[in-house]
Amino acid sequence: MLDNWLALPTGVFIAMVSSTVGIGGGILWMPFLLIILKLSPENAVVTSLMIQTAGMGSGSLAYWRQKQVDFRLMGLLLALTIPGIAFGAWLTRMVNATQLELVLGVLTLLTAFIFVSASQIYGDAGRNRVQLKIAGRYGWAVTFMSIASGMLSVSVGEWLVPLMRSKMELRMTTAVATSIATIFGTCILGSSFHLLMGGHANTAALAWAVPGVILGGQIGPRLAERTNDRVLKELFVFLLTLIGIHLIYNSY
Image (cartoon, rainbow, N blue to C red):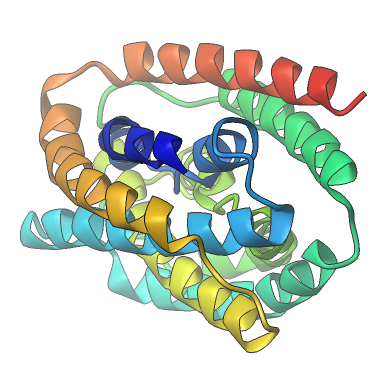
């Protein structure tokens, strides 16, 4: 498909936004793959997860070099996501394209609402690390969130960052860095489950998107150090709202 080349600039943009705000990018990749490239739901989910694996791997490496990732917290969160990701991968095969677009649209608007309503303190005040017993109190929420990751390739980062900021009281840089590293792990898990269930990715889209997300994944962490996170959050919420409305409209 000639439109596959659009995945390159889109990959740079999405990876920059993802690694700056602390999300996985699936909430932005799925609309692109479904609406612009017109992939089937199952094909789009696997492709999105594999693209994010490259982008989040690049972003994780950048944050690891900055020594910002809480690896103990990341390990706990990954363990909690396994059941939800497996169940979500199975659900992808139970819904049609119209239903998936509707669910994705609603989820996109919900994500925008969470970012608006989350009581986050701007700036970088907070803890560098959190005790695992405190993080474990919210394990049920992480497992529930991960269903969307397996079903729609929407990462847990969209909810993890507000959770780590408002409930675990982590610094913004630590929350974003740990979220990106966790998403990298969930993308590997999600891709593996889908491939084991017979799914496959669109190789042409991958070939264009992967160089873009690797480049964007390196730019994002540097951009985060120089940009006010309030401005980034407002731009992200605006973009999510437009996408969510469009997806819901398309589903009817």
